[in-house]
Image (cartoon, rainbow, N blue to C red; front, side):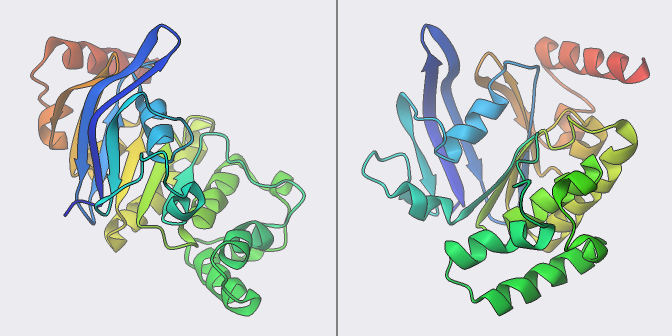
Length: 247
């Protein structure tokens, strides 16, 4: 059974169709990478999976349970999901350690001692132990994003969603964030991530999905989709990405 199963998903904002009959399966311990131009539907898809946006039609299953059912307990579902946004979304009035331990303590009922111990283990592993008592505005953008990722995995999610987690960063900071995602991939974390970093996508993806106008128009292993795309639309998108990278 797949961890995530999206079937014939449709989503519109007014008259604009953002997702059109989109289907996606994500097996356990795999990373699915979404690529495509701005407005292709990547972020909306992630928000629909996390139940931040309601869908118009179709269904979404997490571990076989339909989470798009209007009667579902949204808070219960989100306990199984981790999501990291472009803009970090750390609580500015809370220290790094308090940001990380908040959800384990308040949502998952973990004792403060255990939550702090596990958070420190993660901070140590990813080279941020010395930042535990700092506030987010004292950290670099790359450090803030790494803390945001640590916060999302501290609850041990079944599925981790990452939405362009390097897009707000200076290029020199990008790799320190991508390295933590590579480590999570090595751990077997099940992930769906949208990214414009094609080299990174090639390294971590079990499947790459190219979205255009709310549809997955080409999918397959990274070696096929990124290095040898079959469709003219995919070829043109990657040509533009590569040209932009040379500027």
